[in-house]
View 1 (cartoon, rainbow, N blue to C red):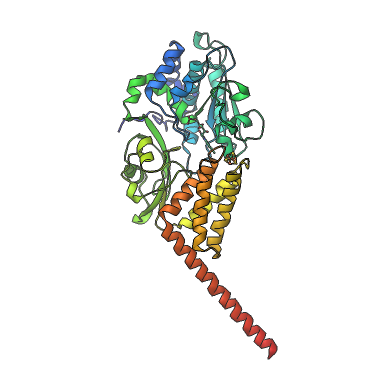
View 2: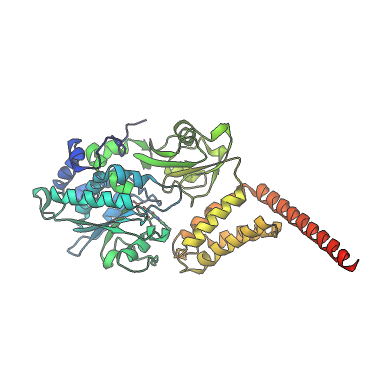
Length: 438
Ligand SMILES: Cc1cc2nc3c(=O)[nH]c(=O)nc-3n(C[C@H](O)[C@H](O)[C@H](O)COP(=O)(O)O)c2cc1C
Ligand code: SF4
């Protein structure tokens, strides 16, 4: 296991203040980056192999290279919306080491020549937003933000914008609309934000963890960073582990580490030696894996080969005592509530899925309902404007495929229970009627 990069000294008291950050060598990498040619810097970021840590895993340097050159206003927008259930790594990064993020963001801004930049933070992260506000002010006071920073020709501004608690504002184009003061609805792509983003200007959007990794890349060099991890999954990754484990929390791991090691050695596995029923490898929107997949390496390609996605790097463990029907219900309700309603398969499909799971729960469903529910998930996947619809359909589809017997048993049990109760009610009503006629 390599040393930690993102979490290095993370629990040092006062690390969120600029004095402690500077004492640990903070902002030195910004000074080095500003001496590089922009093209070389982008080549360095590409060479590191860093993939976006927000969910899609798109190579960061490649995305920066798509930003057109020229005099137009360009932007870097940091996505700190962090609303995917199970994901809480960005919160810790912001709370404990905000200057690492700010330094990475300024380096990215210099690379694409973006003079106006934003951090968009989820509405519920009040404490973290206050910390960022204070850190941005400190960085400005010390000359890391503002006019011609560190004696270079580069002038840069950074503003914090607070969201209002909508999951869809984490989707990059919904976020841009919200940042522009509109209702946060996803936009049609293309055009992609790199060409037409914030206020129609070229915009580089990256997750908190992605930008926070940049100072380490400059320090280690592209090759040094790429040497950590495995092929096509370089570097370290913060993994938020939650659910039925002894020690939930954020852990920094080298990509490629076995999933079993993460769930059992780091997070302690389920309580009381219970077995794992299933686990979400990359947040609640990813297809579930089972105990048979625990030896899969935790990296982008291995998790994809196992049939799921690394997503935001949030592992949710579900032990044998949990009901898959309840799990499906919680998922469906969350995504139905968060759907922006713009496209029919997502708006209707998420709500119908909630109704269908409710039928299973109240004993009115038949085994045919399960086939209909599975078909609805298939109708949603790939048919929506953004992937929020897929975010419900993929995990629910995988639950039905992998735990069909349990769904069927619950349908049967709940029907029997309903019929038993109805029979009791009829019997009671008959006694009453007999009583009246007597
Ligand atoms: C419904 C939805 C919610 C999303 N929420 C987040 C989020 O909270 N944070 C985030 O970084 N990316 C989120 N994403 C992914 C972003 O659209 C985008 O891919 C990401 O910010 C790009 O940064 P990266 O390349 O550094 O990962 C979400 C995507 C979708 C479809
Ligand atoms: S998929 Fe859902 S959230 Fe995304 S645009 Fe369509 S309706 Fe809105």
